[in-house]
Picture 1 (cartoon, rainbow, N blue to C red):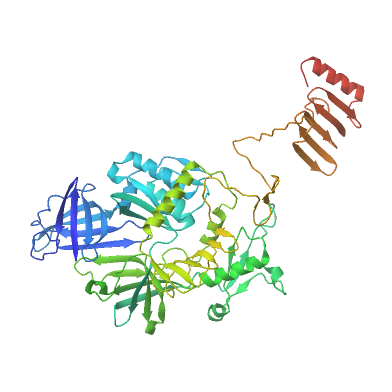
Picture 2: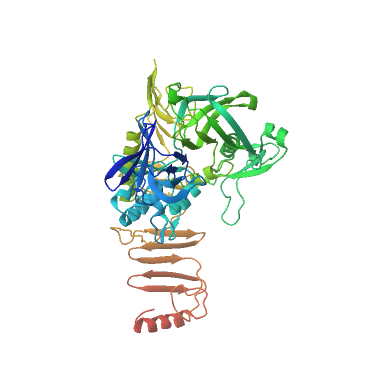
Length: 578
């Protein structure tokens, strides 16, 4: 079922073939795949194998091919070779190999800081530096990427793989892998890899052994959802007190309270300014995340090897596990898989999420989403186009189901088991990542003319009016921009006017007004200090008009009388200015 090939330069040959009588057979070989980890492979080769002396660390490549499925299940390079002789006198080489993801450990990223760069653009820059330092066969290109975020990213002389994990995976979550297509290597960074399989795992069929390790240390039975900060001076935040008659700021999970007692916890939604919405989002968070963290380990039978199942097991995929004696009847995801090529029917798997579940990673993601339309760089748009192309080309394994009143495109042929669903009917065209009956709000075009999307990448965005959720940023139909705060770094503001007296900037507070026109600055009200940059002249209450041609002063209260002040001004003008 499995063939193993090695490659030195352009020369490729079999080191292990299917014929059990051939000298081209490995004494042992296993490979392992795990989410967000470098794939690995270990094998033992005997001296009679023609490839025994053709193995070189970091130079020899290896590929494990599933001939039955016509699929390469491991590709990489040799990392370490150990020569051994057993107590019985058998001489052999034990070889450790690592997947292509390890190429990202061959380069170091110099110190750089990214303050307003999206994930795709960041990865493009990091991979460009990596590719500039390694030969072409180690070049890695950006593949599919549906992760976003512009939080500050810092590269600090770390290995390329470590910097990607530290700046992206550890902050935003998501999963990375390296895949080979058309002779090139691609890095995919997705919210979740894998698909939902139709293969069912159950007792007395294909489940050999199973262990479950439970961890209830992060269970929350009473959740306090927190919204946006109420002001800039304190850390006080919006709560759900106003939605409850008794002013409670928490939500209880009744069943969890009954079982575990009161265990308090918080979750923060920085973008939420409405108490009712905060309550709804808090309840949804509690329902989706408040469960005991479980780590499953199992040995399963891969019945696809004898044609009993349509699909084999693969890390990242989700399978329905059924073991009624242990109370298990739910879809579970394989996070790690180890296969012995001589016992392919019995892979060892680790099941259950290894990533954080009881944290606010989802909240962090919300913080990094771009709600306004920032100035997009050319490479970001190019990355978005490349990502769209890669996702469309990679989506050929879906299923198209045509019903009487709608068309469905899904990751499984049955809408009851499908997770990723495109649904097109008279109401519109929309996508759900939570199944046929799930939420279609991430990407949709509806019959009333509305377009809903979490992210929009484009060259030009045309429209009549722009308004964000809470009204703190608004571009009106007449071109007026209303913003609660504008910060400009490394740039300037230029205002053009055809009228010298037109007020282009007006600052007002009570009776104090300052107006800027192309002709000058006009100030009314109470000023103090060196308002006119006149050393030695403490103005006090002063009404002043400063124009391009003249300076007029009327002093009501001053340390100097008006004639004295005017003489001081005349002296300074005579000497070259104020």
